[in-house]
Amino acid sequence: MKRLPSHQPRPRRLAVGASFGFLLFALCGGAAQAQSLSSGAYYTDSIAVNGTNTYTFTAGSGDSVVLRAGKIAGASYFEPWVRVYGPDGTLVGSNDPGGIWAAEVALTATNSGTFTVLVSDGKYPGSDYADTGTYQLSYVKAPGALVVSPGHEGGPLTNGTYNVGVITNGELDAWSFTADTGDSVVLRAGKIAGASYFEPWVRVYG
Image (cartoon, rainbow, N blue to C red; front, side, top):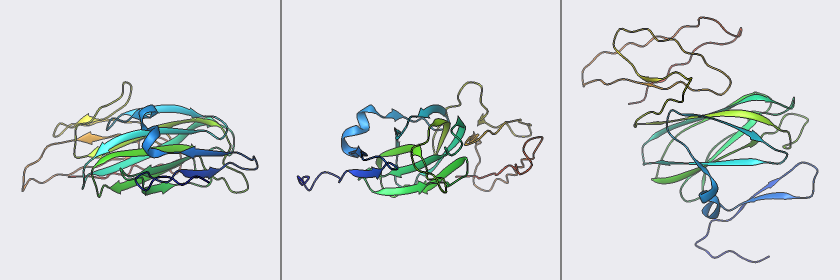
């Protein structure tokens, strides 16, 4: 096998069930074909048999990042698997939910540059990595401005106002507010309707 020059990251190899092929990713060479993510925005895509979709985002050292992917429709055993690689090609986050319809990766960047996100089918117990389906992907980075996709909730909060949102599989609603040193802030979210086990989760980043 031909060795890669020392300055190139080693390709990632992913076995694909019982087939005899494999998927090959060279993070340094595939970024040009990846979709760029905007903080606060919402993306939908589909996974073909043995498929992987690639995205990128930029972050600085110390930035907080949350990515969440959730199943919209597809094969019974399809659930999104999210992996994040740093600017140097190191795996910095991975969540294969293993039978759950949504996966989240939350991290704090330890270096600056372009990060690569891979979304593919995960390993369902007793199944393989080759199921197909559609999913939605949410991405939020703090600090920074938010982009709210049409038809979705989020954006700047006004003191004293009441905001209604809807959370679907794999969705993050991102809101922002401004405050000064010494200000007191209270945020409260409550369930209006939804699945039996649905309850809002609130996180605040400075």
